[in-house]
Length: 258
Image 1 (tube, rainbow, N blue to C red):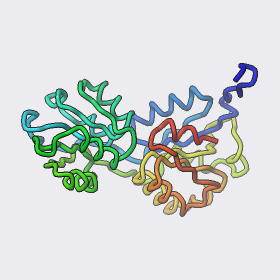
Image 2: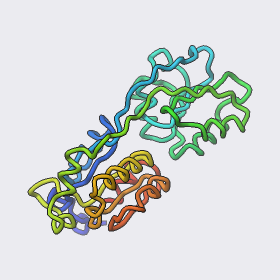
Image 3: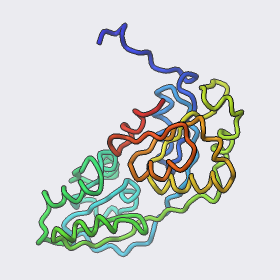
Image 4: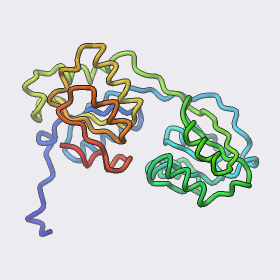
């Protein structure tokens, strides 16, 4: 396409405000991307990630580590960084490499693809796999791996704590004059869309906006969901539209921005 035919990048006023609901510090990285693309991020984390004391097997007793999120990577000890690590997606794999893990492979998709990657690259008759997850997570992936003959040690290395109320930034943006919610503004962080990176985050958001009587403030907004499960949690709310990413990663999600 000739340069003169390329659409101009949106200015901040053109992009408008975008609600970023993911936990810190990931929310800050997403906010930086939004700013670089002309949007005004409204950082409003709905979950807090906390470490869980986990009794992990020594690295010599393991064949590999599987992680379903970057949060799990952040809570693995340095002693386990020389093991093979299989990550659910490219962003999680990149996070593992930055943390010092040497042999990293990405399923580039979801938990089902992660189980398939393990089946294709690891030995079911070999040492056990460490499945590092959040508290209460990973049961379906463990079952899929066990069905392939793997011995799986599932360990919760972090837990999530849901916000007790809407973050102040989100409340302020949603209580802006109703007529301004559907158009961008350079005056402040009035939102036109919300980003949701997990079904759990969407579930918390839905509960809080309903409890605080603010669901009607969503009628001019677009909800952007990273997966079908996330979209399902959002659809009962009166959004102008719910859009689902074609691939469960941040770039596919940001591509949906209005």
